[in-house]
Picture 1 (cartoon, rainbow, N blue to C red):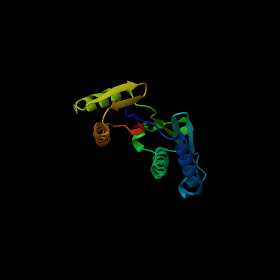
Picture 2 (picture 1 turned 45 degrees about the horizontal axis):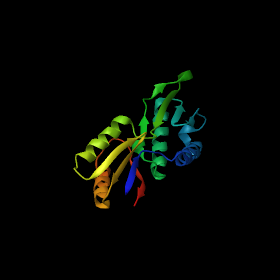
Picture 3 (picture 1 turned 180 degrees about the horizontal axis):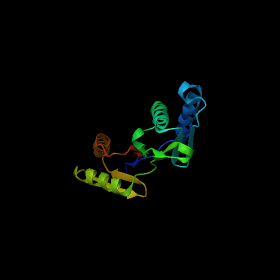
Picture 4 (picture 1 turned 120 degrees about the vertical axis):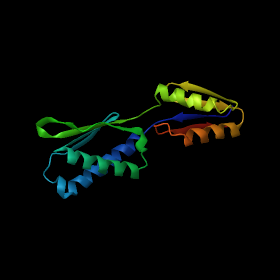
Length: 161
């Protein structure tokens, strides 16, 4: 039976590449010369640390630009607030969203079921699988989920005939 999965995942290699590009750009910028600046990724969290909140915001803007250029969906990032850090510095954390949260999964299920198509929708861990006999019904469901702003970055994988 034809099916596909709705997932939310970020390519961590592309995130690492964007971080490296950002660090290279910071090394050459005049306003960051001689300043304490740190940008690192730990698992699904990115940590920004700079001399003051202006520098953290500039660092975040450069990172956002580099991530966008590398096709990392910006909706999959949850930006934390700029907080005071140690020794008068400022810091910010960014969470990378991996997987669809349960409440968003339920919202996708409700959205597809409201279409009254002959498809089955099931939440499987951190992804949603949509199965149906007709490919046209699956494509209608895919189009509806893609057009709806769910507040998360969604990708479609495992489209099986």
